[in-house]
Amino acid sequence: MAPSPTGRFHLGSARTALFDYLLARKTGGQFILRLEDTDQKRFVEGSEEEIMRSLDWLGITPDESPLHGGTFGPYRQTERRDLYQQRANEFVQKGFAYPCFCSPERLEQSRKEQEARKVDRVRYDGLCRALDPSDAAKRIASGEKYVIRFKMLHDGSTTAHDHLRGDIVTENKYLDDSVILKSDGLPTYHLAAMVDDHEMEITHVLRGSEWLPSFPLHVNIVRAFGWDEPVWIHLSVFLKPSGKGKMSKRESAEAMKDGHSIFVDDFKGLGYTPEGVLNWIALMGWGVADDDVMSLDQMIERFSIDTLTPSPAAINFQKLDHFNGTHIRLLTTEDLSARIKPYFVAAGLPVEDEALMKITPLIRERLVTLDDCLAFASFFFKDEVSPNPDELIAKGLDAKQSAEIATKCFEILSALPDMSHQTAEPPMRAYVESAGLNANQVFGILRVAVTGQKVSPPLFESMEIIGREKVLSRLQNAIMSLENF
Image 1 (cartoon, rainbow, N blue to C red):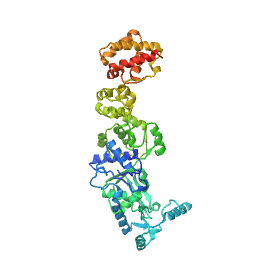
Image 2 (tube, one colour; image 1 turned 180 degrees about the horizontal axis):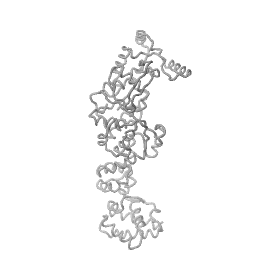
Image 3 (cartoon, rainbow, N blue to C red; image 1 turned 60 degrees about the vertical axis):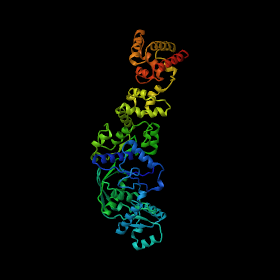
Image 4 (spheres, one colour; image 1 turned 90 degrees about the vertical axis):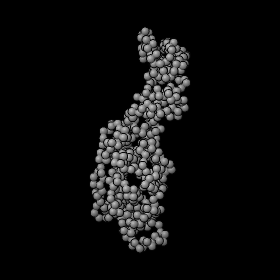
């Protein structure tokens, strides 16, 4: 996994990392995180930490990385500068590359002239390609600024094999003499990634399809060194939810308004589970049923690069919600309780672990995201609730009639020895039947009075957890509210 620390860690990178992780675990290989930080102008402070934090949260922690160390370090490309310079100079000596002294102004002028001539493809015009090597060496020795370009063949074609797409043939006349070492001595991706993949003994390169245009160049660099090529896999592109076009910053901002994101570091705060997120992204570009529910271990068991697909995958946040809710229901009560507790704590509610263990099974089926626990269960931990007076009035009744029902409920419940659901439910149902009332009306009033909301977990089980004292106090407050309506 070789991201650039130039921005936030998004779903595309997470999916690449997941497939890398699955392949490594399936084959007994190593999952290595390498940070391609040679573009120092675009470096974003904190992005390295976000990458590693996101992978840890997803549960696909690398075997080797700048944080974990290992056999193939260092893992930041800026710390491998000497290696790239050595390889670039080796290329120059062997005639596979050459120094280029062209200024940005000259390159811009050349580009405009080619555009005016309407050439098939704008590329470097090759001025320095024809320089005598000894002259070039003198200019370098004198301190003149230069880059190193790869000397691409101009005749014939390049055949590059992608595991998902087969052979990709490109006429060499359309390929450019790309810069492989910049004037600051740092490599471009084209050189650094190929060198590092060789040095780190990488067998499979999984990366985004945006690298397909550079694929012929990379293959030619590897072949010029005489190295064995890795298996190349360019994964499918992510489309925005409409299925039309790549996901952009504007669409990601809109998604946040709806409680979604394309950045992994946001998912925890939005109440998503790593299990749900992994299951969701795994099925985008993997040719298995798109509703398959899988744990990470099950993914490892089933994974094969032969079942990956190149077809674009639309981001479907409804499926994320589906998978997240499904994985929430697969968690043990202990695990789920531990995961929802921080949301109550962050809301300033005094959480009792024993009560939370009883509450969790009551709300489990209703949760789509972990933070839904607040909407369904905050009332358990409050001293008082403040129901909307309008909601205390049952359908078909007025405030006075509703107050009379609430008063009768108080009388029945206050006479009971405890508030267990086995004790409280039978006399309440007997009251509904003997009074000829509608159960929805009576229990609706009781629910709003005791929980403060029209929708709640099972009523009598909830009352048992709330406790006798609080239930009766809340009922009294509701009666007063109705009488004063």
